[in-house]
Amino acid sequence: MPPETPRKLKEEEGNTDQALRPASWDAYIGQERIKDNLRILIEAAKRRGEAADHLLFSGPAGLGKTTLAHLVAKEMGGSMKVTSGPAIEKMGDLAAILTNLNPGEVLFIDEAHRINRMIEEVLYPAMEMRKLHVVVGKGPSARTLLLDLPPFTLVAATTRENLLSQPLRSRFGATFRLGYYNSAEIAEILSRSARILGTAIEPTAINILARASRGTPRVANRLLRRARDYAEVHGKLSIDEAVSMGTLELLEIDELGLEPQDRKLLEIIIGKFGGGPVGVGTLAAALNEDRGVIEDIYEPYLMALGFLQRSSAGRIALPAAYDHLGVVRRGDLL
Image (cartoon, rainbow, N blue to C red; front, side, top):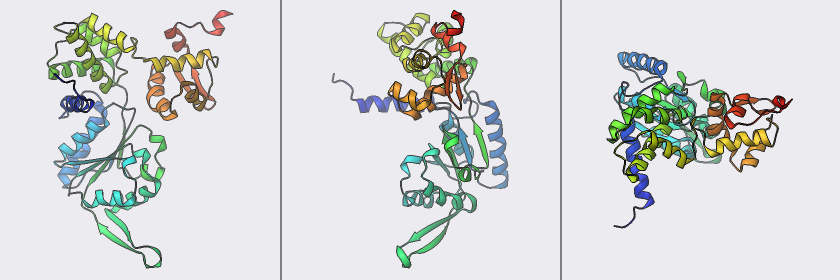
């Protein structure tokens, strides 16, 4: 039998992700405050026969921002068009998207903080007045056409709300910040995903994987799939404690979900810079990592654990980080 191609494997992974995506409010576990607010906002809009207010979802990657956008579209009874900030390169790209919207549709823009500032200027009247300004021609003969847009809801997602311009941020009717999930919620997500995948998993294994999931559903489902693979290769009928521990060891993930780069980041701050403060640019160079990856992926979870602190002078490793790595602080040697 020929080996599976990377493209086929990627498609199968994508199909699994889609199968695990909650399709209703009840299936969406966690973020209760946000769900309650969205239910009221959507129900009120439906009773008035209007499109829902434009929505902004922010928070670290993998917490369910895209899933919430899908649920908003489903509850509003319309479909959803999906794009991203980097994909909208020219004003014509955005104009084509907006003019092809149907009444009541949801337009989802991922990575909204990467929208070009010139393109934002086109979004403002579209969001406020449902008007699209189109410039036809060039030079002195250029003229502006004003096109009416159908009622629609713009849902934007970002991992870096601080990079959104204030004019754009102010045009959203509601802003929701997603936080990390607690262990009980992640355990419930793992149980649900295991049922969908038809995989038997023991409670002890659920607890181990939940603790290592960084409070993030996407990570939890990824670890579950890897544990399923590990169990299958080792002839196990279910994911037990040994399988979950073996999976984490193979992936070099510790009991709190820290990966090699997380630990290396802390080790550099402590070992090379005496615990900090040290600038993120210096850390990016030392790690040979993109600054945005450090700020978007590594730092939010390390800060949530109480391992790292951001200050005006730079990043500082906190006592809990020393304890976790088993490193003696300089002050303790005195």
